[in-house]
Length: 156
Image (cartoon, rainbow, N blue to C red):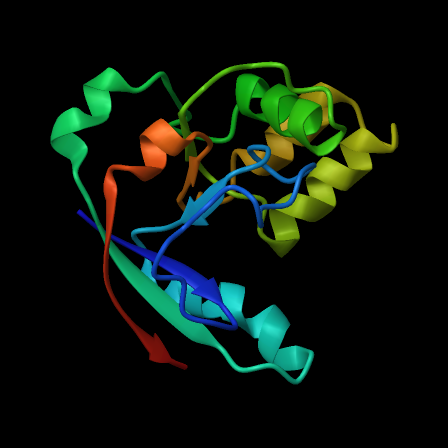
């Protein structure tokens, strides 16, 4: 499977050192099978006057069974709880790989309203159920990163 990472530079050797904490699925290296989503990830760097670059990887899914994986097929109560734990720094899970929808702008607004106590969980889930999930994979351990092989990069 081909996966993409959007940034301002080529990343031939992904690592966990440069990853941020308190994001959707916690500290890790984020990729997507959706090229256009990776292009959107580059947008925040381009708005800051940096370039945009898409790095491309081959994911060896045949060894995925060896990883401790958490997969969300839709925006759900479990997804919302996991996102909130990760974003608030309370995640203590030991998953190698987390797969699911990311919090794009519209989804993020709903998550923030819930996080701030302005809507309850039921209202948040009701709003999210109408959103079409994008897809991101978060490689959270070195063991997981070993399954990615750099294939090249391009400027966007």
